[in-house]
Amino acid sequence: MTNKTISKERELPIVSGAGHLSTGITSTSTSSLTAGGGDDCSSTDLTSLFECPVCFDYVLPPILQCSSGHLVCVSCRSKLTCCPTCRGPLANIRNLAMEKVAYSVRFPCKYSACGCPAVVLYTEKQQHEEICEYRPYPCPCPGATCKWQGSLDHVMQHLKISHQSITTLQGEDIVFLATDINLPGAVDWVMMQSCFGHQFMLVLEKREKYDGHQQFFAVVQIIGSRKEAQNFVYRLEINGNRRRLTWEAMPHSIHEGFMSAIDNSDCLVFDTSIADLFADSGNLAINVTISPREKL
Image 1 (cartoon, one colour):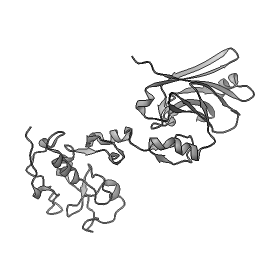
Image 2 (image 1 turned 120 degrees about the vertical axis):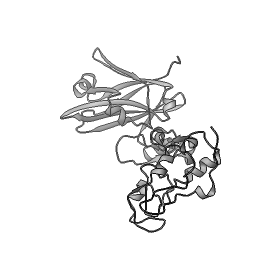
Image 3 (image 1 turned 90 degrees about the vertical axis):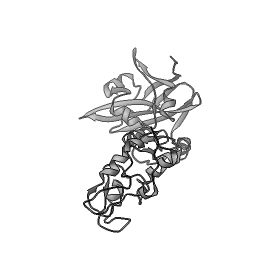
Image 4 (image 1 turned 30 degrees about the vertical axis):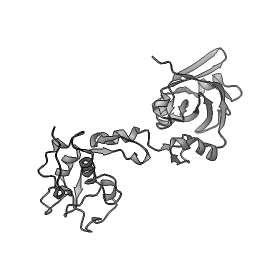
């Protein structure tokens, strides 16, 4: 495919009237603007056409413009009463030409400032950013009170400062003792486990998942990325009264959070009657074993 050069007169969207939609990229075929088409300079010039003048994020389809042809992203548009560029009224005019170009341009990930090198098509951008490893990590502790977010390197520092009550045990095979499991209402028990140079968090949560029916959910998450999680397997085991209940799975990354595992029952699940079979004076002991995953 032959690369094409975009002249200066085509650098900005131009609209001659409310009923006439056009862009400066009139004579250049959008098929020549696909991934890999054009040099880095022209690619940068194209993405700059889509920069929102308010938040400097990208204006992506559906693309609306004011009557003078100025663009603003959907998020900012909902907060504005007039065009931020010309102060004119915000009309509901679709810029179909710019939308067509947007489907052929590669955009940097919104977390590029955090180090993400990905440059993806508009149709892949949202999906990539939802699982991007450079996305800020939330606090892995259960409960809705802590809204902290930050880089993976700062998660443990946050836990040590803001959640000092969490106990950390060393070793690949430990026992987590959940006390007073008969407490009413929704209750969480949390413990940290340190082994193989990584930190893991066990969360045991009691909640009412169905009407009047309380259940326990136990899951292990790694203080790390999804890629790091794939290197390990955790095993939960409850023993007592000649009974044994076990669960084995790959730990979840704190990027996903433990809530998705609980909502999908992708964890050790048992009801209060089962818990009573294994409990001793209202306390429940769970054996937790972390192992490196065998390479196939």
